[in-house]
Amino acid sequence: MAEPALEAQFRQLAEDASQDELSAALLVNRVLDPTVDADVLRHRIDELAGACPSGVPPWAFMQQRGFSGNWAEPVTLAHSCLADVLQTGHGIPISLGVLLLHVARRRGFDAAGVNFPGHFLTRIGDALIDPVDFRPVTEDECLHGLNEARGLGEARGLGGTTFPDPFATATSAMIALRMLNNVKAQLVGGSQWDRALAIVGYQLILLPGNAELQFERAQLWERLGAPDAARQSYAEVAQHGGDAKLRSAAEAKLADLGDGGTVW
Image 1 (cartoon, rainbow, N blue to C red):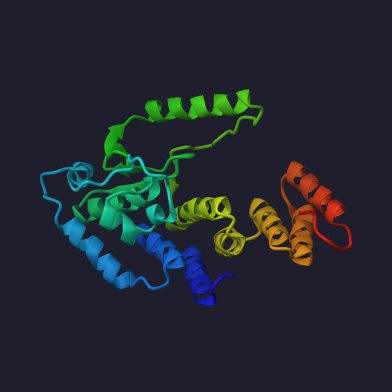
Image 2: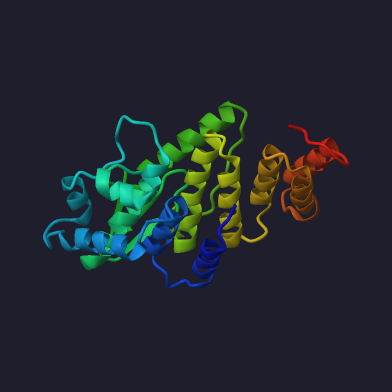
């Protein structure tokens, strides 16, 4: 279940726009490893940033230090933990991107995360950088990949999704939300329903009342054999969910659950 101390920190992150991306990522690291000392870890990352020579682009420095999102082993929770990423050099785009942003700012660059759908990007000065291999990319190149993915989804009958601004700046709260999405996927894949439920709880602090997250919470309560809690969450979606299809799905789930028992 969610930890009250962590819940309070997520509330602070949601309310305080001055917190940086590193603070968000360190908070996610604490969710995964409560023993981590965030101050010590931040100091280690500061040391990394301080080692970047003034004449070397920050993304080239990260390459030289062996950081990469290209590796053979499967993605694990460790790839979302900055402590592990620092040690191994292996991470997913968003964890690597957060490190790059911190290094770049320490070297005097304007830097921001880019909330690109399905693949976190960074903007360092005028350069758009893919943190997987720390190379500059163009917006057209990224949009081409996004359109290909959208077309594949439509071909599979999944429908297409429209993104108003795929290159929108990612706030620290958005970064925490995306990192928690990655963590949640790993936990659900490992049938760790209780831990996944805690993650959804933290996400709902960042996105209060979000119907999709409420629906996920209901599904996880079902997995845990708690039909009453599942009904409550499904009822909230059925009554207040903004999407008609999601409301309909919640109503169907409520009908399946009935007055007792579980559909699992």
